[in-house]
Amino acid sequence: MMLTEEKTALRRRMQGVRRAAGETPGLGALLAARAAEILPDLAQGRVLAGYMPMRGEADPLPAMAAHRGTVCVPVIEARGAPLRFRAWTPDAAMVAGDFGALVPAEGAWCVPEVLIVPLLAFDARGMRLGYGGGFYDRTLAALRAAGPVLAVGLAFAAQEVPEVPTEPTDAPLDAVLTEAGLRRFAA
Image 1 (spheres, one colour):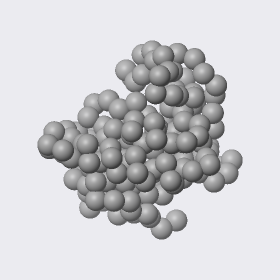
Image 2 (tube, rainbow, N blue to C red):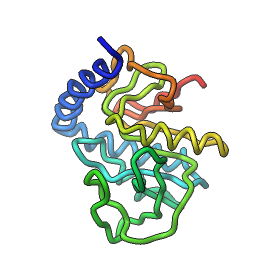
Image 3 (cartoon, helix red, strand yellow):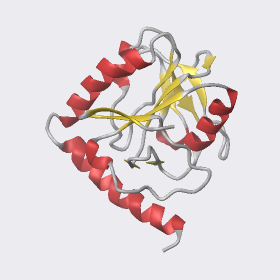
Image 4 (spheres, rainbow, N blue to C red):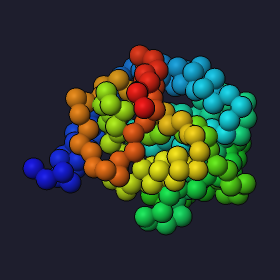
């Protein structure tokens, strides 16, 4: 099977796994509470990027609201380009952006130092499977070229797979937070 086909098949399977985990009574709330406890401490004194959850993604909003500092969310400006990040607060006016994600209607542009990253699957190497657009891979490459950044996947433990099929442009995560806790990966 070609790598593209392998990734497509895994994406399809993991969408169902993530959906089932998110529908497990109390599991989503437990993960959101863990994120609100752990992620603001990891990002203390730094700009935190989260995301507006959709399609059954784990919910980072409690962690974003608990952060005592600048929080931002991704904005897609063009296919093939890295994400940009706009400042967000819990009461920010939001509008529909590309791919259906909500984005702040206005606000300052920010450069995140800690990113909460959505995903479909992850493995013990810290590799992640996203939706296939490469937005986070390009973004992490650009941010890491400019300085240190911490990328933390937010997922249910059931989203771990033995191995995510990868190619040279796939950017690894530094850690993954699941309902079981924070797991860091070797650099």
